[in-house]
Picture: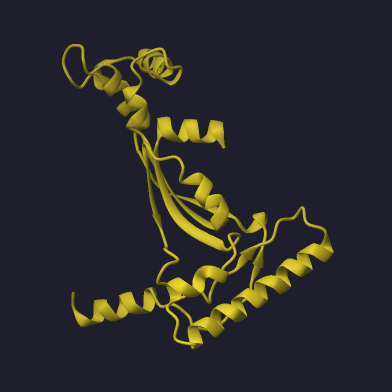
Length: 193
């Protein structure tokens, strides 16, 4: 990698050492669709009929029959393998770390990319404050978060590694990650969460 690209990458991945205290709630949660299967119905159709006859059936089939075949697969009245072909990739921002831990319990048919807490500098973190808390408790949560961030910085300043300093970071810290799931997994994920 040339020096200009290295510099660009360093700037892109820079971790601020400034202690930032931001308070967020669920209205700050952001889910962005990054990528998806462009022709999911064709993929489902072709996979469902792959074991019979010749390939390339899509072009030779009426829209009505295409619809019926795809419908049968979606209703789970045909081979379910075709439901694993369409995929969806999401960038999820400002989700609590606690919620992330629940989401990643879905493993088969799912891939995740997340920023680790181990060696990274976490001074930039914000916290999700649940709306259900009464105002006085919200204020107490905010004060405790500010205190934990102050203690985190104090631990770092004492020369303790970031991985050890994270012991004071709350589970409701705002977290960002990418999640990729194929259709069958996403369908089950939505039904169970």
